[in-house]
Length: 483
Image (cartoon, rainbow, N blue to C red):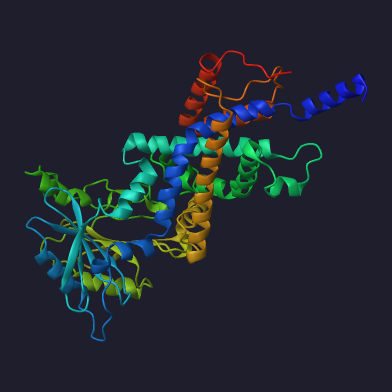
């Protein structure tokens, strides 16, 4: 080959790979931050997907009963037995309603110190089977690890950042994988096990990543609306554009009546404060003692029952019968009224979003004050509802659970292979970031994408700027690509 021909080939190769090292460098930074979080998210998310199968194995003596031919006791009889079994000062706050013949009946109580505790009874005999702390049960701890690393607000922000940086990792990963030159689709999509060493790890990482990219993208986008910072702002924006919550969820309808004067009196003890917190003015669905609520109704103000001092509140059994007559038979939660003006709040959060239902029922008359259904949601809330069901592995049963587990554990494997690749190529006493290009191309599309990402996710934008500055000042000033 002549010198001129070789120079042209080198020039063509350089043009084809223009910007490759810049993308690789950002992919490296994104992966460096995201990898440990991906492992945590993968393990906790997989466990949470299989909650229906795991919890009965963890707590069989509390959750599982022997089906009997005798009729079940009424909800009111069971609630009375549960109250009798709980310590002084405990108050029933939530009644999960389930009709499976082999499952116990559960009631959730708030203790005098504010802690929530579940009590389980045999629905056929009324025998108390045991109790569990709501906050310390395994799946709740797993969920809090998944959402906020058990670190409260700082952990929630870290997980939100990790999700945003995963978008950068996915985008740069696809760009790095994109076939160049004479690379065939088969070579790009099928692992080459004939390779050895770091080349094999790199090939496995790239091929596995492209197969997981779509699922990872859906996971991130369906999880972000539930974050405590950006998710709340996104919900507010969607609502302002009439694409989010149902009408009235943000104060558009007069949902609350005037409270009696006694409601404003100062409580004497912390336990009394806890006993009344579920019916304070301005309470919304997310403030109620519910395990989960549909995203669309999280900010819906909780209405109040009519002021009826002399009236007798309807028993729980009457509310269950009323809800059944409205088409909701089982698998929902009822928040019990905690004051003279409280309401029965029914939250039905099934696997199919089209069946979601939220009901507010006057505790004295049984009047349905508000009935929110899927058809009342805005377009964004409908999309989020489906994304949530898919994200949690609920929409199409066990197959959905297995798919979510495969994607989650696949992402964990991506973190492991990425770490191995970095370990094999890292220089001594150095971060080992890919070197910069000698003459980096403008890459306007890439820069525009980062700016837009930073605008849509402001917290992400701040960290993007911090990483860019650190890359320029700390991680070496001008490492150049070898000629």
